[in-house]
Image (cartoon, rainbow, N blue to C red; front, side, top):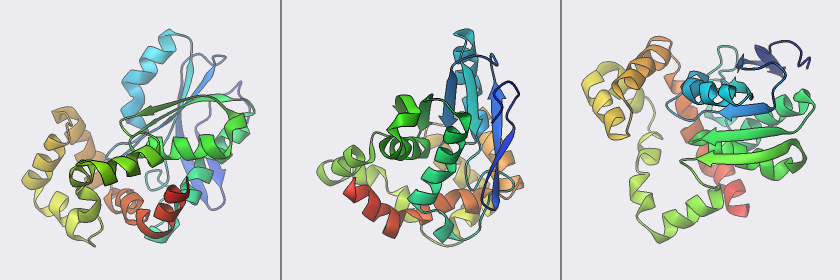
Length: 218
């Protein structure tokens, strides 16, 4: 990749991923990975702070979120695939990066850093710790109860209906998760109106099975 120019997209196989590239063009590179229910736009305020310190930020709309990288099947959301989506981008930059993940983005950031430590200058995980610590907490505390929505999101169609046909109930769920009114409005636009919800939920639906086995090994 030509770092003297802004990077707006990159391709891996059949999928094209959108990138928000901002800040000083010659600054140290910070790659930002969002979680659910978010997109790369959720990093705007964080990016502004990083720009003040001369960092260049690259926020990726990940699989299921980028317009041309939304496979419909849950089986396209294996942890190995999600990890390689990001790793391909970082390798293409040609230099080690600061990698920051939030929520699901933390899971992917951990996996990338473990598999390709030579490409990572510094790793920051927000909200979700390393997956081994998270799984340990699920088995030794009430974290499993707090993660009940993992089971709810496994149900076909029902979660989508909750948000689309029962907006008040959906809003209540989002508010209890700590989202602000502005963030909820963004969710309604970017996920409901743009029909991005099912592919975003595939991160949860693809978690059990192959993904869980990989995490347990780590």
